[in-house]
Image (cartoon, rainbow, N blue to C red):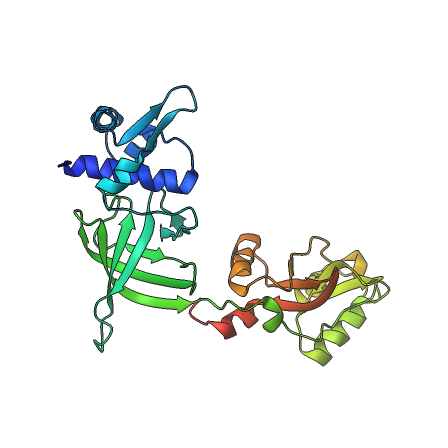
Length: 292
């Protein structure tokens, strides 16, 4: 059957949203992604329903979902095992769009690297000149950043000039952490912390009691205590940070990077079998892939 361009946009956006959320999708959600009038989307939905491409679910939590015929019509095959490859703009994930395929077109050019990014979803919400980030991809954890220089509304594809491409390390953080871990006991003083930091050339150390992580003290904590006129013979447990960000040793490095930004921290403690065994700092991450 011959679908109009707007019908294809609506149908592929419905499939993309349904694939991401696994529940019925409201017409207003599709209209928001496509930047269309909700009434226009509702009218087209009735036509798509008459063609057997969508089903409607009544009720407050109702909406629409694609039929098997819709996938056949658009030549799409999506399995439950497929991962969502996100695409973002300005750090914000773009809803209703999933990257299906990336084709590199000018790898041998000495100055330019172009790619065609094919989407499950509509290209309507993208503009030429915008910077986008694609990924990470599920297998190689590839992240691509680039500028849109064109778009194909028939094939739902973006043409981008790649400015940066990174494959995130898939090894666990135990392979990147600083070890052995230098710690301070509960009866250690600020003076003890200063001596440890100076001797080991570090900026922070966990405070441990009975092999349990109790907190962390950093060079910033020490400087703040001295600025407040506190005695350097005061115990570190009195000035340490108790809300310590931790991560298990088996977790992948790329999975913890976001925690540094979200929590605005400079380091996190690595835990194995319930005990602190190492520490990961921003410097460790930069050494692995400086482009971040």
